Image (cartoon, rainbow, N blue to C red; front, side, top):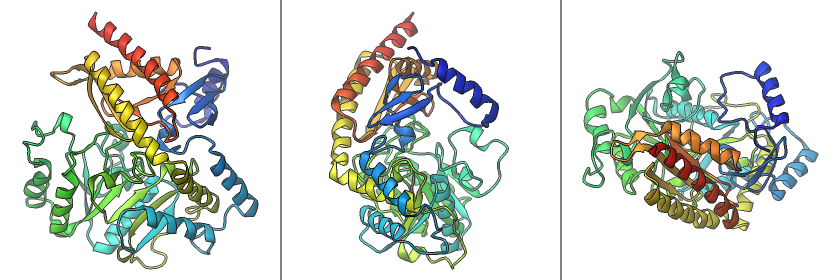
Length: 438
């Protein structure tokens, strides 16, 4: 049945009457169930999931170990607020997170409910610890849509329109080498994007002695799954250390195995001062975390808290997520399938001129669609058509950035499903390329 079917259309009509129109839906996929790397809609159509519930379902849908952990904890107790009391599950998960995050030093964890809340906690802790009140972030960044985090976000106008000002944030270009803001070419540029922060921002109008921290994604998500040069973070870390500015690593989308490492920053051999974790850490349940060096988390009791953060059911799920990724060798599979996907998409790039760039690490891959390779004009309509054709034929994939296909399947995806999805997507790309040529 060509989607959306009758049950999906009925649900859409009901949704339209009662759900906030501030939400963005890419296409009318009405999910009924999911298993592994497959989701099924309310009309019985099945899709290979290249979205992972927007990078939340790294371990796949309804992983039996996570489901069992949720049931087991639900039989014990559902909630008792770690803000005011104690329970084992939250300490157990914090200990495991401290082990898998980079850095051989003592750490502490603040649990919350989402990525935006983790960003809010990092904003407040940065201010508390440093007694500074200005921030750096990147053009194209996405760190959340709450009142504080949206000041850091800079990927779409609709995220910020009518909601500013809130915080003192200066945005600088991300190392988007395919579309360099300075019209330079790596490596001949000698990473001017880092020197620019020093020479034209911190030395001219953003006082470093008033700047608390730099929020940055190790692979920029919403602006196009952009991978920086290998030596970028080492240079950035050196600059921030020069001015005693904290490095806040946003792993909300790129972490918990997505790139074939526990956290994407590991690819760049850099250790941050703070890390933001959310989305996939609890296997689909709401959970976020701020992880820092122990000495940084020096705020006084009562200065920041949350009623539902660190929910025991979510924590129990989180423990099984970490265990399942290890036992099922998901990091290795993410690397293996990711390398294969990159190879196949780069082969397509040689065949179809509307593919301008292919980039990624592990199962976090961006395929940028353009109208012209020389001008690099965003191929927004073409990317949208590829997305829609793929979805109608059984691959749930969405867009990011100006016109990038966002490839983010669960870490458990098999080669057979990858090949089936690639066949469908290449068919869509081929058709759109031909129609563009007419």
